[in-house]
Image (cartoon, rainbow, N blue to C red; front, side):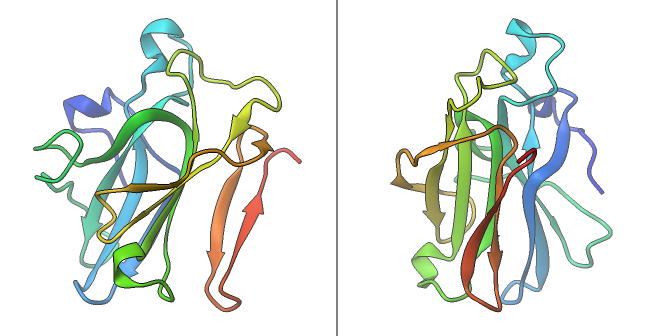
Length: 167
């Protein structure tokens, strides 16, 4: 689906765990994915757990393009979140939320120097956005979480669930 093609991706683009949503008002899919990594210079063997978050768009879910965003943290790129670097991140679209908070982002921040957080050192930061590009911090620090956690929105029950790996 995606491969790294932009210089800021630093040869790295993966949808883990990211988020992929249909936007009915724009008649397109959007996928948020981890791109680039800050750990590479300090930890060359890292798997990229110090990333930015980028977005790609598709009318059919097959052919994808990476938009040049003017509202990006780095204008002219498709980066939608870069500070702090993230260990993992999940984006979901909340149809029940007001338009100003339609998109949600949960990240586990990292210090940008190591690809693995010590056990129990991780925590979530929670953000919201009207457009999936410009994010507003809502919760600065949750309780501790382990590495590799993700969140998803259950549209039928309108609840947020947490899944961790390994548990």
